[in-house]
Length: 490
Image (cartoon, rainbow, N blue to C red; front, side, top):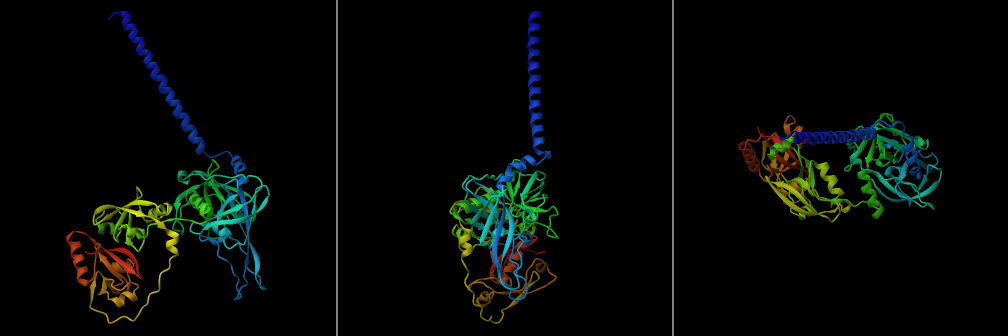
């Protein structure tokens, strides 16, 4: 190669090297800037003042009034407060000379310029007058649109001549433990007050079926109930609802119902004045490790169907003993996961439910009903005549068992024609007693097969041993309510 050619090639290689260096430096600077911005967003703010100024006009104090009846036994009557904690509501006791009007305090926040306001159900429960006070001092009477006691959420409406400042819901699922949050409300009747802290924990469950609480150490006290918990963008990611405290004051353990639960409830209250949750129509229980072993499962996961009364699931062909592993295209981790996702599904929606049945996967198409309508249906009374003489008994698995008769079935809350084995006595030192079985329980299945006689159960025990299993899965009914229990066969 000629010297000139070598020189040109070297120059080209040098230019390419310089270009690669430039791009590497540029990308590095971009990444550093992004990390710096992220760190800045997560770092402790110098002040919460700007955020407080931004959201304060949308936060309200709520005062309710109701008539408290006079006591009939000489003791003060104190109406129930929150379904979670009583300390949020500050009712006065009635006077000795008769009923009197009592006031309660709480907080809330405006979610639309036309005057919709969110608070807790226990703040306004039983009230016949509701007044809302804004940050400016303006006061308006509020009307109740709808409530949801299951999540302790209520929706109010005020009429205003001018558009009202409002705040929006954020995505509570994006919040991480350690993120900064700010609470605002009316603690102890002191007026508008701000407190700040971090997300201490997520997905807390207190006492409700649909609980999904964000735990925070931001100070929450009486009167904060129903107020908003903000992220650093000024979005509501929780509704302050309860605290854990030995003395009724804040000790840094507060709970806010997650906005992703609240926003859906509010949408339904706003549209219908009530909630409309999906209903599958099954009784379910978690899969414990011993139940998983008894069923031959590799992991304790899913929701085990213990009973299928009349309803959508029964119409779709679901059976007791089915293990629900997927609902509407998403895996099911446990019963709580399934209950919440069914409730969030639309009434009347046809969903695919995947179940494991006798070791094989099946897909059922279930058209969801409405949970509130199902809960409103009462059950008829059961006549309980005297039981006849007991038939033959036998001791198995620490249980003294006898075959179920029609008279025994009716007495125990089951329908005539039911089959199974009745527990007439139990060894209190046995595994069965330790797992909660008691006299009067009825075994209707063993190894996911029906048992009608003592010989059926003995056969199921032998089959489990021959298959090398350490335990046998029993379906137990108590007062008609079913649950699965795994007992050792070794």
